[in-house]
Image: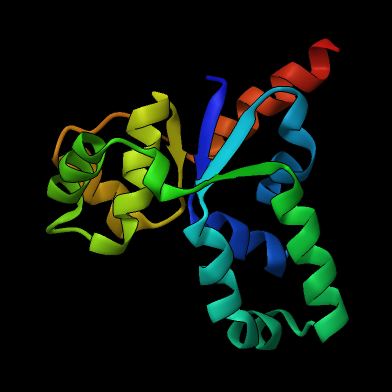
Length: 151
């Protein structure tokens, strides 16, 4: 498990608690994992900036600081670099779950990675469709701790 595609809700959770398991993995796991996301994640986080600031009780400066910290370990990929066949397949997969997750699934399939999400509706929908390229925070954290203890 090396390539991890980060869903927006993972980044969102890191804003709310940088010291959580999610935050630890995302900020310190770069030596074990290659984190990816569609470039769309940047716009989604900015789109929800006021909500993130309100929920996390963050100042504008703290939001900007965390935005940089969170995305410094995530390689964003322009969706136009992914072949259409991956988007078509991802669209079919996401059709009845959440069409907004299409770029994440397309990139995940293209990279042959694992989608890291905390979105229960997405997880359950993907499992129902026999989609197995997902990883939970608990499984990823257990792997992260095991790797940390070996160093």
